[in-house]
Image 1 (spheres, rainbow, N blue to C red):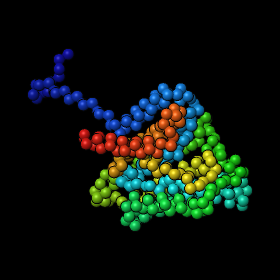
Image 2: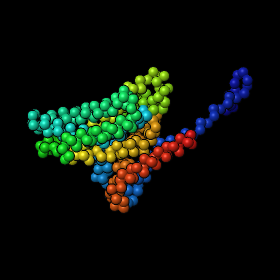
Image 3: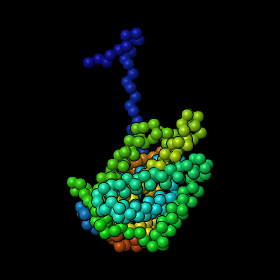
Image 4: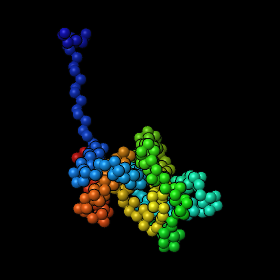
Amino acid sequence: MPDAVLPETGTPPSRPAARPLRRIDPRQAGPLIALIALAAFGTAINADFLSAGNIANVLTRSAFTGIIAVGATFVITAGGIDLSVGSMAAIVSGVIIVLMNELAGVLGAGAGVVAIVLAAGLALGALAGLLNGLLVTRGRIEPFIVTLGTMGIFRSVLVYVANGGTLTLGNEMRALYRPVFYGTLLGVPYPVLLLIAVAAAGAVLLYATPFGRYCVAIGSNDEVARYSGISLDGVRTWTYVLQGMCVGLACDIYVPRLGSASSTTGLGWELEAIAAVIVGGTVLKGGYGRIGGSLVGAIILTVIGNIMNLSSAVSVYLNGAVQGVIIIAAVLLQRGVAARR
């Protein structure tokens, strides 16, 4: 069949140019590729790595870091940082234990007390996050300084309340509270289900709402965002509130695991959360965030620790050093990608 011709010129119409192949963004594909490579490496080292029990253990342990990392994604995307999440987790966990023991003495041990304390943990985290947010926005203090200060305050308050020792749940309440961490629904641990729910809610908030777009805009260029009519103080404050709420949720499922809180509770969680976010592709200087990447980043960190335990080739005491190397390497990779663009 002959080519069609244009009625006025008598020449065949030009064919549309072929679209160039879309390049794969390493910030999106890189974390998933790294996780697959680690899984293959772990399987090669120890065949038990892919066992159902070990996978469930890895995902359950990833829940704490993953939930906190979802909140940290909003803070970092908007150009902030929160170094206090580990100490915040310590004080929230301590208050949860004290509150649960007191309510059990007044109301009696029961599921109602557990429900009240679960809500209280979320509220306590939100209040701690609000404190950080207001100090940053209303106090006009750099986020690094604010959260460095509250990091010391939160942990010191816990040590004071515990009188330098350990706060422990009563036996009755501990038995009632344990299923929150150890229980399952259709074979899936509750912490994993909570992690999925928090990540899904975070993805909707970041990608499908004005608030998420405002976080990206502020992190990219806060002056342009201000001239666009975005409330910088309001959005930034809410990112810290969200971070605090995520810490509260993480504490709700962490306390029943051990049933206690001490000066070492949550130690290093801020490093793990930031590492998970950066490894997941979120830009440390702000303006770009990936909820799914943060989730994968949290799993990667847990998998690395799990492989270290299974292989015994590297001491588990070097886990913090490994995380530090991962953060540095991830930032260097981000700079390399930005330079090529």
